Image (cartoon, rainbow, N blue to C red; front, side, top):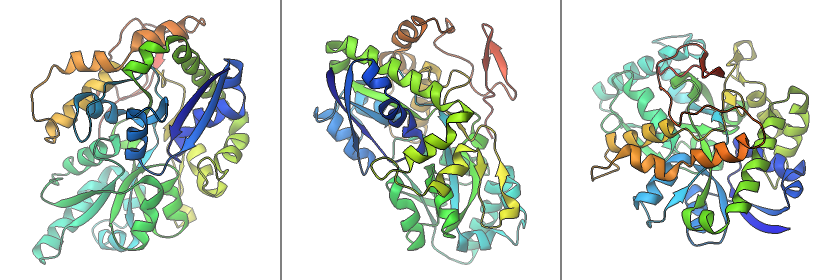
Length: 382
């Protein structure tokens, strides 16, 4: 058995790691995996950088930042496996929600209008000389940060001038909102639902409704480790692929929620996990429970394929918000980090049909479509 230490954050989309461990997919591949629950994304990055763990569930943009030496030490990271698509949501405090109601009393049922309603609140607050609203993201280099910025910008809200964006670790965002340290946040599940269940806030819009089937976490390893441990890396990818396929089976939902709720994994109440698994948005008023069919997408639509077009978009957002000072060859950087050929070799080698392309058009399909005969999901932006 090959021993390997893998870091993860207590989030619903850590599920492939939990399932691969509990269902025995790691063991079947000859891997003795030790899962390490971490408190913050910076912990994950630092432990991977210094070799305290060999692999990790990571925010996809962290790989770009680390590889380019932005926001920390320069350490080339790579991925050949995506944990899935979507799973984030933007929530606001009850106080901010009450400020929004006079402008649209059905805002919870109209997520597409939520940023425009927030713009009216911000304009009113600026006119009254009130301080800027504070929104939290889980890390500066995260899909949460870029989705929040895209949502704000869609209504003409300046992420730099009209609001303040701060960093709070995922398990701490609900507490931060309860203590009025922040007015809202963009985070992965179950922490959006958990705030609503604790009556600390409400969910305005999901990540899926900002960018249909957006990328999320990936399996991150150092380039050095990947090159020195090719066979172990391949076994890891195949074990996780089997776990993702298992998660996609409706009959496995109850077992999945039970495992995730365990304190060594997500450690959230099962009631807070069920909404995400059932693709529901929970609101304090039960009459307003809303269905978002692709709120989380763990497997279908090639959700585990590491698309280089996802990496391209992330790098472009890093450039747009000033995180990258120097010009760079976006395509070349994406190809150096996202090892699509390895995924294709491992998963395709087990008879799974995969496309020949490493990139796909993003933002052009508002309905499911076919790529080389394979069913893909919609990919429109708000």
